[in-house]
Length: 640
Image (cartoon, rainbow, N blue to C red; front, side, top):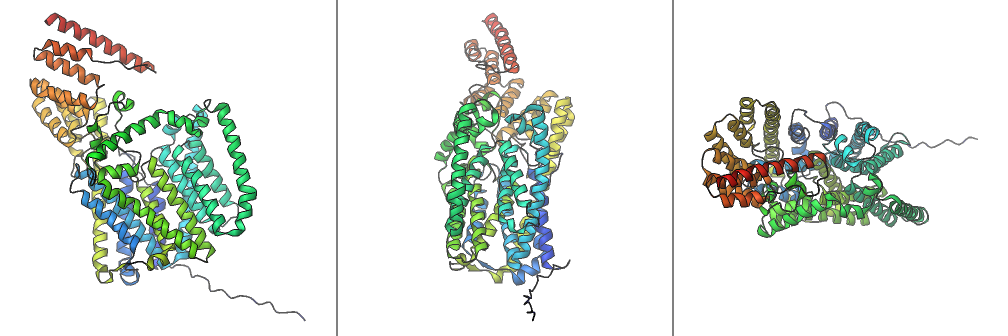
C-alpha cells in the first residue's frame, strides 16, 4: 500500500502590482542606488558630484511625494534613538552655517546630510513595508551594479595595463570613468563586495556569488588603493572571527582551514615583498612600509598637521561647514611640496573625522562618531540576543561594511561623494532595522501628530536641493566654458562666462578659487585695470588665503600704480607660500618701482629654483627662473 506524501502548502508572496507601494519602492530604490551611482553630466567641472546631488535629490523629492499617503498612514512615526541622532547630526550641520566662512559651500555640504537622512528614511520605511521585497530589490541592484561597474573598470584597467602595465599613476588616470578616480572607484567596489556577501542567498545561480566576489577582489587588488586593502583585510578578519562566535559550526572551518591558509598566505606575501617589494608598483603598494615613506603619506601627514593647528584655534565649534578647504592655507603651506611647487590645492583633508573636527569643532566630531558607535553597539546587542541565523549574519555583514566605511573615511573623503552617502544611509537603515528590538527598548519620541509637517519639510528640503544642485551644475558648465575661452585667449567670452557662472550657490571653482578671479584675469588682459582691481578685490574677500588670488590682486594694484597697497598683499602671499617665486619677483618689482632698490634686490635674491629637479619640465623651469633673475638683477644694478 502506497503512502500518501504530505505536501506543505506555502503561502507565496504575491508580486507587487504596478500601482502598489511595493512597486513604487522598487522603482525609487533602483533610481537612488543604481542610477544614482552611475549618473553623470559630462559638461561639468566634476561630472559626478553636483549632477548626482541633483539626481538623487530629485528622486528623493519624488519619493516623498509618491509615498506621502503611505507614510502618513503606515510609517513608523516613533523616532527612536538613532533617528534622533541622525536628525541631530543634520541640525548640527545647519547650525554651523551660522559661523561658516562660505555660505555657498557650507549649504552644499549641509544638504548632503539631508540626502543621507533621506536615503536612510526611504530604506527604513521600505523594510517596514516588506522586508523580503526590499531585500530582493537591493540584491538585484547589487548584482546589476556589480556587473556594470566591473565591466567598465575592467575595460579601463585593461587599457591602462596594456599600455603602461600596473603603473599606479596610469591606473589613476584611466580608472576615472565611473566615480572620478580609482580611489573612489575602489571604495565603491568594497561596498559592492559587502552587499554581495549580504545578499548571497538571493543569487539565482549557484556560482554567481563566487564569480562576482572574485572579480571584485581582483579589481580591488589591481587598483592599488591602500585604504581599501586595509578595510578589506580588517573586514575579512572581523567577519570570520565573529561568524565563528555566532555560529559554533563554523569554528572548525575557521581553525582548521581558514587560519592556516591565511597564515600561509601572509608568509608567502611577506616573502614576495622582501624579494621584490621595491621592484614593482603593485608590490610596493602592498608593502605598508613603503607607504609610510611615500610622497602621498608625507603629504597627508603635512595636511593633517596643519589641520590640527587650525583645530586648536577653533576647538569647540570649528570654522563652519564646507570651510576647511578655505582656511587650511591660513596656517601656511610651507613644507607641502606639491602645494608649493605645483600649485596643487587640497580641497579635502583625506580624513573625514579630522575635517569634521575642523569645520564643526569637538562638538560636531563627537556627534558624528556617536552615530557609528551607537549603531554598531546596538547591532552587537541584537546579534547576541537573536535566535534567527539570517538576522545574525545580516548584522555581522552590515557591521563589517560599516567598520570598513569608518576605516575608509579615516584616509579618504566619502563624506563628499553622493553615491557613498547613499551607501552610508543604506548601511545605517539596514542596521537600525535589523536591531530594531534594541532601539525599541530605548527612549524615543512619537511624532505621528506632526507627520504631515515632517513630510512637508522633507519634501521642501529636497526641492531646495534640486534648486541648489541645478545652480551648481549650471555654474560648473559655465566655468568649463571659462577655461576654454582662457585657453583660446578669448577674454571677452571669458569675462561673460565667468559672470554667468556665479550664483548664490556657486561662488568657487573646483579648487576654491573664486569665480571673480577669472573675471579679474579677463579684465586685466583687456587692459581694464580699475575693473580688474575690483574683481580681484572681491575674489580676495571670498578667499583671503589663496596665494594665487592674493598675488593677482596685488599685481593689478601695481598696474594701477598703487604699489604701497600691493606690497603687504605680496608679503601675505609669500607668508602663505614661502616658495612662491612669482610672488617674490612681483614683490621685488614693487619695491623697485617704489625706489627701494635694496629691498628689491633682497627679494630677488630669495627667488629659489626647484631642488633636485626630477623632470625635463622642472629643469627647464629652473633655467627660466635663473635667466629671469639674472636679467632683473642687472636692471636693478643699473638703476642704483
